[in-house]
Image (tube, rainbow, N blue to C red; front, side):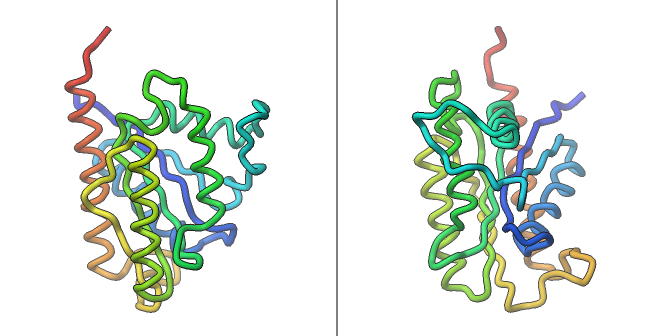
Length: 193
């Protein structure tokens, strides 16, 4: 039986059904079709208090997200482009990775991380995707070769939230394949205790 990797997605906006949330949910369905387990933290689930390193108290939702990241084999981060970078909502969620600093896999080490950036126009999307990949790399993870940029000025989703743009659908599928494949390879080569 093939190993079933555990993939976690974080992202979206505080607006339910945002483009980045739709993309993240679509990616989750792809990951599950490939045999992985999937959990998502999106939108208002990410409304944690501002990260404070000197205060060990954590809101239950923040603790749940950190525990999921601690246990995951791969991670996906989806953000809208806000003012040339990713949103403060996502930045604050990523700041909680500091709680993993003392783990045997510190921060995001040993995990493949996929990035999805969305926005109305290419310029903001490009800088957002580059910013996400830079932070992921700084946290010790391996950014996947595929990063998905979604220009919402084009028709990407239908009324039900399904991806109708064939290029975006193909990119999300490729990202899902990379995440699951990497997680399985890492599992196969991780020494057992």
